[in-house]
Each structure stands twice: as C-alpha cells, then as structure tokens.
Amino acid sequence: MDRDSYAAELRPLLAPAAGYARSILHDLHSAEDAVQQAALRGLERLATYDDSRSFRAWWFTLVHRCCIDLLRADRRNSQVIQNGTDDTTPDPVPEFHDAERLIAAIGQLSQDHQDILRLKYFAELSYREIADSLAIPQGTVMSRLHLARNALAAILQEVPS
Amino acid sequence: MKPVQPSELSALLDGELEVSRRQEVEAALASDATLQAQFLALKSADRQWRAAAHAASFQPQIDLKPRDSSRHSAVLITLGLLALIILRFAPKFIDAMTFGIALHVVALVVLLYQLVVMLLEQPKYSLTEQRENYNRPL
Image (cartoon, rainbow over all chains, first blue to last red; front, side, top):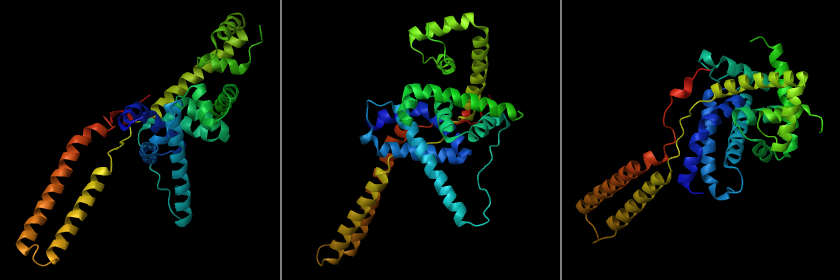
C-alpha cells in the first residue's frame, strides 16, 4: 500500500477512531492526539502492513496501542507531579450525555468485555475483524460479545439516565 | 434443529450468522414469544448504544504531511552553508561580496523549494475536511 492509498483508506475511519479513542481516554483532546499518533505510526509502518489482513482491524489496533501509550504516559506524569490536578478537559457539549453514559458504563466492565464492546460499537468491526484484533476465534467473539452486552445492559439499568 | 443459543441472538442482530442457521433462528423466533422478547430487548439496547457510540465520534484534525520537506530544507541549508564557508576561507576562491550574494541565493533557493513543496503537498495529505461533526447531537 502506498501513501496515497493509505490516506484514502484512513479518511473515513478517522471519526470512528476518534470516538473509539475517546471511549478509552475519556477526553476529546487526548483522543485526537491518539488518532494523530496512530495515523503517523501507521504511515511509518506501512511497509509492514499485511494486505491479507483487514485494514480496519489493523488501523484500530494501532489506535488502541496509541491510546494505551497515552494512558501510560499520563500515569507516569501523574506520579511525577505530586498533588497534581486532573488536566483532562471535560466534554463541553451536553448532547454527548448518552455517549458519556455509555462510555462510563463500559468502563465498569471487565477488560475483555470493554475491549470487545469498544471494537463492536466504536470501531464497528465485524466478528472476523474483532477475532483478528483480539486473536481469538470467531465463536468466542460471538459468545463474549453476548455476555458483554448483558453485562452492559445490567450496569445501565442500575445507573439512572 | 439445534436449540437456539442466546449468543446466536446477538449474532443474528449483527448479521453474522450463516444463511442456513439464520433461517433456523428466524423460524424459532417466529414461534417462540420468549425468544422474540429477548431479541427485541437486545435490538432496542443495540440501537441506543450504536447511536451513543456514533455521538461520541468526531472528526479529528489530523496532519499527515510528510516531514521530508523540512528535512530536505535543513539538508540543503547545511550543505549550502558548508560549501560557502569552505570557499570563503579557502584563499583566492571567493571574496566577501560573492560570499554575501551566494548566501542570499542559497536562502532564496531553499525558500522557493519550501514554497513549491507546501503548494504541492498540502491538499494531497490533508485528511481533515471539516470539523462541524465535532458537536453532532444524537
């Protein structure tokens, strides 16, 4: 894949990637940073991209790793700056309330359930792509996703809207 | 027919069941009110979560402009200045006036190169078309 094809493939995936990153980082600006880093990282690693693999799955794996890197860096900074204040910028738009509620509820689930729900709802991956991303069989995707949905529904029922 | 597993309702909702199994599950749904209620609850929640996830997405400002142009400029400037300094301090090769003129020529070439690169590459690698989706409501 060349640089132009990469840019063309990436363009429609930027907004879902931003939502996906936001669901992990809980902050708009950090999410934008993560997507920017992933875009550049993908560009650097184009030569290693395997054409037989779903581009979407590959791209969201990059975004996920960049989010994890940012979270780790954030934790390191928090340790260095003792008594530091939370510098994350709250989402300013009230229309995001349902999105925030969903993101917060997903954050209460087990890591496996969080990962699979984010890949399904924010990254909009197919079962095959989720299986590829998480390195698990498609049958496991089906059962885990169902359990995760039930767990999410239970949490959302407890939390008042 | 195999009994319908709860996880197959999820797969049906996601359009991930194979055709033959999908037909079997749909037939079971049509004749089983409990199963149908479970499926409708799943479908309703799924619709809400999709909408919420969609609302969380926004168009980020992403810049994929290659860094090569600035690297090339730095290399050009360094090479040009090195050449001029060597020539300036090597007797009989270049006088102060020629050195000054050459310095300006190098600066002009680098500036023009940078302008041409910017004009050619800016639209090509700018991924962000608009930002109005940033505040999209549900």
